[in-house]
Length: 298
Length: 307
Image (spheres, helix red, strand yellow):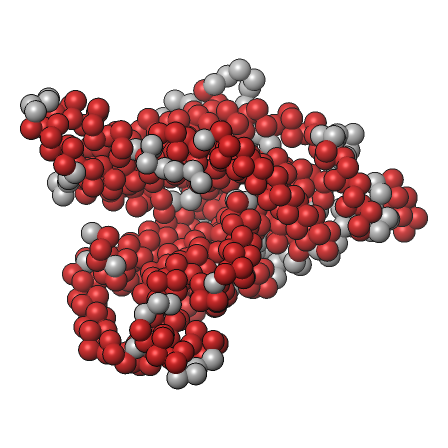
């Protein structure tokens, strides 16, 4: 995909661009932490979506014989059960599913808005740019979680997908800033001038020339947005504003586990270790991508 | 400098006004109200309640009334905590939250800066790698995971400190919450310090300092570290926002009677005035901290020009 985009973006840069991506890939492959993280993420995704089918239990089925049993007991609850006798293996993996879906969904939405907004502001410039970025500054000055909490009051509790469409819809601020900065420097390049001279319209220049060329920083930032969004979801669910019972999310499981940790520490440790692994892996991957795509930083 | 400070301060008020206006209307447009309970109230009682709180008036009139109250420092009555005004609720909790937040930022600087310096001085050594890996972990771990874990280890297993709760004047109840809140900030500050110190160590004035035979600790402390800490100063603004956010969770996890938990409870109960009050107070707090961090930066770094 990136190949084609680059070709469309800057024919003059074709050769060096391909070199750039190959180079980045080579650097990324050399970064052990990133490659391990990427593998772990893929494995977790496979387990999360395939794993629950292997267990004989449903996520909300109550096992009266085995309430709050620890992992590894003489039963088929591989990671133990919670206070109500619900299987923790299935519930945790369901939570991971939700986390991954929401992370991707919200990141995609914020990507879409952020790139369009930033590219437009940067390219059009002048008073419109000023106005648009002022708006971003104002939203920026409030801690993001406040906006998230305000939004969570707006939607029917439990409809987490709509909520995260909305969160993605305000999560684009940093993305917009990054893209705007890049666009400002691209704007003066010769190939844009050439496009202008041959009478290409503004939206077309944005779509064909500007956006494909800011893709590097966008990829980096998107990789770092996914764990952020996963974090927001579990944060909201932890506070009771996100996923509602009997559905499970990593955040709500951690909340339940924290209350039971005196007697049943696995209820905290099982979901917590999944969340921590996911977040750490995404962060390492994002760091690795930054080093690979932006060698000036090193 | 003074004129710049005043102009920036002048910019805070319109920003705050827009934040208040936006959140007021967003919160009011949300479906459901503070008096929708599981058992529906008889319509007459609900109407009376709404009239008593002025909720039956048109929205713009409520808005004007709310602004009028705000100017006089009146955040209105809480819908759920009957007999309490929002001002009272926040005034009760805010000192604890502020103590928690500022201790956390202080601790983070006291631990983060030395760690970052150590990592930079031993670049690419095992020390450096372990500090930086811990930093990634510290940034990645959310406080609702570290909080329970810290309470588990130091409170339940080792029994050094109370697991949760609060008694006025008993600072030991604050230790675990402060540590939990500080961890990600420590990690971030360590990373920032390392990065900028590495750059400064390569500059000419550091070479000069070494060349004139200064002992290494003086080169680091007097010459290198001072400019290297500028990014840390500019991070202090975002750090406060971070700590404010973290306090919501940490106060919930450790059962502290701070004001952060009111935002969450207010959102769950659709307690409009409480949520609004929290947004106004915490919003202005963040704006002011950002402003102070910016001004401090300009004061420390003479290269910054005001125009």
